[in-house]
Image (cartoon, rainbow, N blue to C red; front, top):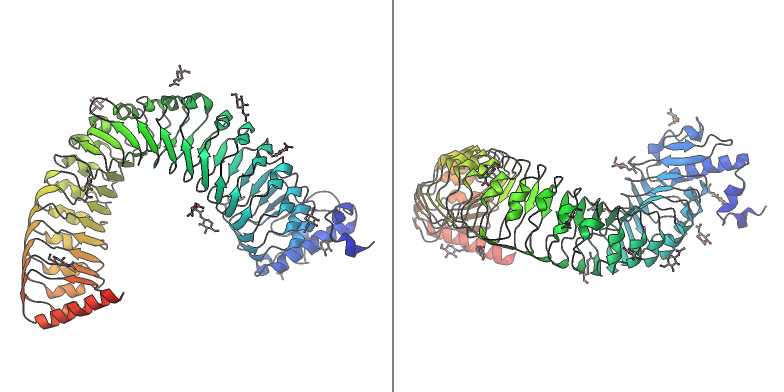
Length: 590
Ligand SMILES: *[C@@H]1O[C@H](CO)[C@@H](O)[C@H](O)[C@H]1NC(C)=O
Ligand SMILES: *[C@@H]1O[C@H](CO)[C@@H](O)[C@H](O)[C@H]1NC(C)=O
Ligand SMILES: *[C@@H]1O[C@H](CO)[C@@H](O)[C@H](O)[C@H]1NC(C)=O
Ligand SMILES: *[C@@H]1O[C@H](CO)[C@@H](O)[C@H](O)[C@H]1NC(C)=O
Ligand SMILES: *[C@@H]1O[C@H](CO)[C@@H](O)[C@H](O)[C@H]1NC(C)=O
Ligand SMILES: *[C@@H]1O[C@H](CO)[C@@H](O)[C@H](O)[C@H]1NC(C)=O
Ligand SMILES: *[C@@H]1O[C@H](CO)[C@@H](O)[C@H](O)[C@H]1NC(C)=O
Ligand SMILES: *[C@@H]1O[C@H](CO)[C@@H](O)[C@H](O)[C@H]1NC(C)=O
Ligand SMILES: *[C@@H]1O[C@H](CO)[C@@H](O)[C@H](O)[C@H]1NC(C)=O
Ligand SMILES: *[C@@H]1O[C@H](CO)[C@@H](O)[C@H](O)[C@H]1NC(C)=O
Ligand SMILES: *[C@@H]1O[C@H](CO)[C@@H](O)[C@H](O)[C@H]1NC(C)=O
Ligand SMILES: *[C@@H]1O[C@H](CO)[C@@H](O)[C@H](O)[C@H]1NC(C)=O
């Protein structure tokens, strides 16, 4: 037999599979696979002291001679190229080499694996194109090639031949070109994940004929056009995600009867318009509705609260409306959703009073934002009912009134944004109970009175911004300077704070930015400030500081911005000016 000729053909070993040589061929192929790896040593058990069927990751058939039917080496740390010899394991049904550091091309010889059902090569660094030869793997049901670096077009041949495919994921690669219309041939397909590629063109309408489809993800491509109406034939559809594309059009009014099993709807970051059809309230399985960053308008369906499984609503950045008469009913209705976790309503045309029933939302709610809306009224006194909240953002609105004392009951809060409203009155000392808080933004309002010393209990705080309230007065509580986590910035500028800057300022050893401009702070700038070793920005301008500028400031090596102007400082202004000049020069230079 002329081996030289036969070696080019896939069928060689298959033909000889009844002979003992086939078994030896499998061993040789496995050893070649190991030899190609840069760290084949990880496969120490792959040695001649035991038959290859007992090697790690290898499963053989029970027939004689034994043949390799599965190779499972997922997440075993393998590195290097994938040997084309893999294509000699012609009885292989499962090849799982996912989550390793394999690189180079995917060998075309994989096309020799006619019995292959499952191919998992995801989470590797494979590059190059998807070999057309894979279309010869006609038994393939599952193909996982996500998180690699494949590029080029998705070969149309695949879908014309791999008609047994049930699931295919090419997620997070660099595939270009259109989605092949021939994918419509995959009549058993349940899962199609082409997200995070660079696909263009429109979604082929033919896909709608795949009755079995239940998971469809095209997130993060450059697809355009409308969603073909045929897609709504997918009566088993569970997760539908087409976010971050350039799609437009409406959601059909009857979506509620078309997708009865839908649990995830992701349309975010496109150019969709029209209203949210009230029939969505009939899809009782719905958990997530993501419509953010589109042109949706009109009222949110008041019946949304019928969706008992609902967890996440992303409605931000649309043109959704409400006023004092209409549009806010959905909030009252959402009180029935006992699993609600996220409600994001920012950047819309919501107006009127912030609805009182918002305090009756589920205590499972973790995230609530209503920023950049023309909402007025006050923050309901019982906001403290929402004890599950981790993020609360009421900012860039026309809200007035005080910060309710009950806010101190939100013990899980990590982020609190109450900036650029018209909030007035005192800062409640109960804020000091929010022991998990990382960031507190309450700038640009009308808050007045002293800064409560209780804020010194916020051991996890790394940003505190109370600037531009103009009326916060009294001295800065020394407790603020002892906050152990304060690392990012402390901004109390443009208020009416008085008193000296305490020595304790030197305890802010991790702080990057300190801004106390525009107050009535007086006395000497304490030398201890030199202990603020990582300070990059120090603005003490427009106060009543006197005495000399501490020479120790020179010890703060990373200082980029230093503003001490408009004070009553004297002494060695020459050094100061030199310092400033050097800083300026450095700033201009970089
Ligand atoms: C793979 O099979 C071909 C014959 O089809 C043979 O020439 C080649 O040596 C085999 N490679 C290995 C590593 O076994
Ligand atoms: C060869 O593999 C066996 C297990 O199959 C293992 O116990 C032995 O340590 C291996 N030998 C070497 C030299 O790695
Ligand atoms: C592979 O391993 C990773 C990490 O252990 C796991 O998340 C993944 O589900 C595994 N994949 C398969 C196909 O077994
Ligand atoms: C790829 O497929 C073509 C056409 O079927 C075939 O001629 C070629 O030998 C295959 N390549 C490999 C490496 O198997
Ligand atoms: C995409 O894949 C790369 C590896 O190619 C990985 O580093 C990255 O984390 C993945 N991104 C996502 C969103 O999964
Ligand atoms: C596969 O899809 C192509 C393009 O849509 C079509 O021309 C062809 O007839 C289909 N083949 C089968 C077997 O359905
Ligand atoms: C989409 O196309 C634009 C320009 O046409 C390009 O800048 C962008 O990177 C593309 N996005 C993706 C995800 O390919
Ligand atoms: C979708 O269903 C409609 C009837 O609801 C039917 O007329 C149409 O042919 C179907 N489309 C596809 C692509 O199956
Ligand atoms: C919701 O379903 C009910 C019962 O099937 C139906 O009567 C009603 O019209 C549907 N509502 C919407 C808005 O489609
Ligand atoms: C919240 O719910 C309680 C109990 O159902 C009710 O008495 C109260 O009026 C509701 N509060 C608001 C502001 O709607
Ligand atoms: C404050 O919020 C209003 C909307 O209420 C917005 O127009 C304005 O730009 C915001 N100001 C700042 C400084 O962000
Ligand atoms: C320094 O402070 C003065 C007075 O407040 C202000 O006018 C000026 O813009 C500030 N300079 C810099 C560079 O921040």
